Image 1: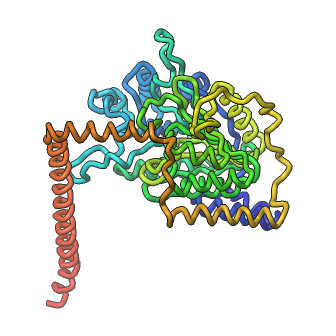
Image 2 (image 1 turned 45 degrees about the horizontal axis):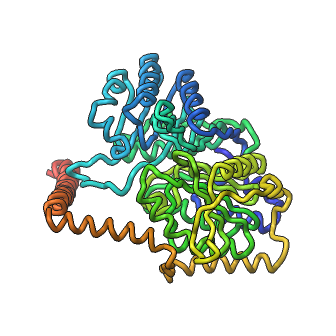
Image 3 (image 1 turned 180 degrees about the vertical axis):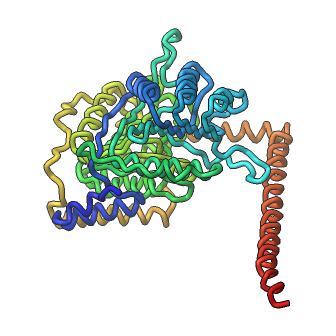
Amino acid sequence: MPTPVSSLNSGGDFVRLLADQAFSRSAGAPLLAGNRVELLYDSQENFPAWEQAIAGSSESIFIEMYIFANDSYGTRIRELLIARAQAGVAVYLLYDWLGSWKGHFSGFFKPLLAAGAQVRAYNPPTFTGGISLLGRNHRKLIIVDRHTLFVAGLCISSSWEGEPAKHIAPWRDTGLRLSGPLVVEALAAFADSWAYCGTPLTAEWLAAAPAPVGDVAARLIATTPSTAQMMRLDLLVASFARRTLWLTDAYFMGTSMYLTALKQAAKDGVDVRLLVPRSSDIAWIATVSRTQYRPLLEAGVRVFEWNGTMIHAKTAVADGRWARIGSTNLNLSSWLANRELDVAIEDEELANKLAARFLLDLEQSTEVVLSRQHRRPVLTKPRHRDFLGMLPSPRITALNSASAAARQAARIGDALGAVVRGTRTVEASEASAFLTIGLSLLLCAGLIGFFPWLVAAPLTFVLLISGGAIVLKALSLYLAKRRRRRDRAQQQAPHSDDTD
């Protein structure tokens, strides 16, 4: 079992150890040293790396993927997996039913099963389980031969490659390739999801213990519904950041608690920046995100919108020493309802590389600022500054004054206090976004008024499935109770025969 970094640094200062303890408990994951990590950007770097690793596999392939699309790239990966399965490599694929519904219903995965691969769908609708549309497996995980791990925001889909013929650029996204002790944690995370959907993996697959191969310390945060581990960690990072906190998110809908944490950090002098899509593949989320701009801007948070087709990355980098890459978006669905997977890295070199990439992304983005006349969020060109000169110095590693510690404690308190308040003021500048949302709701109301079956039919179906599932669950519990009584009676029967 790998040794946590905190135990290796027992002679470090108290604040550093205390922070490590707070991060470990919030994330539910230890900080493990000895990893080698390589950042991969967009489909141009991630997809070839995936294909090369899969094609060269000799023992096993484990894939946990939200979208495994029935398109050209999905077909390419499927054919590689079929070839490896036919060559004797153990292939385990877990895809999300909702994210991959087209392939699920079209029989896209049947050739994989025929080749000997093990394939399961996460959370499909069933009569015994009801319909769980909100809780999804949103992870993007590939493990090859139990020594190479890929974690990303990208899915197995041609959407990330764009459409050059239609002048649609590839999506902007970030992933990583990792080897070392953290692979054990990734295998355990996959095994947990696999067991949730059926028979568990055999113990032999979890026996591997990769030796240290590098000098990067990282945590693997594998969240499950209602654990909120990543939410707690994101709040901690927002509270502990001292100089910089740069965030990229595809579907930003921060809670009142998280918005308060960002605002308090900015007011305390932290350089907080948020990069989000201008045009999104889920348009209504971008509209809702814009309703949250004004209070952030007034607090000093800088907001940027990506000019390209779509920015899908979920990354964070703080103080030039901490970085996060994975599948978790800054919204309640990712924080509380889904299975997500992220790698939190504590390494100055990698954090600064990710920070430099963030600054490069800002050059292809438009900053949102408050107009002088109406104090409304408006778009403008990015400010021309020496961004590289603003990269955080990696040398400052601890709190340097009692006042700084007090300010950070106040920010943490304010963030937690937002949970109790749970509200924020709606500003006049948000009128257009709220008008769009209001008109959409009125349109829905009109449609439902003229066509009540639009609501009645789905609601009836959901109630029938859910009610039937609960009844079947109750019957199964009664049957299990009856079997236990019969088994106990059979166990007592031989003793009665011996006494006759």
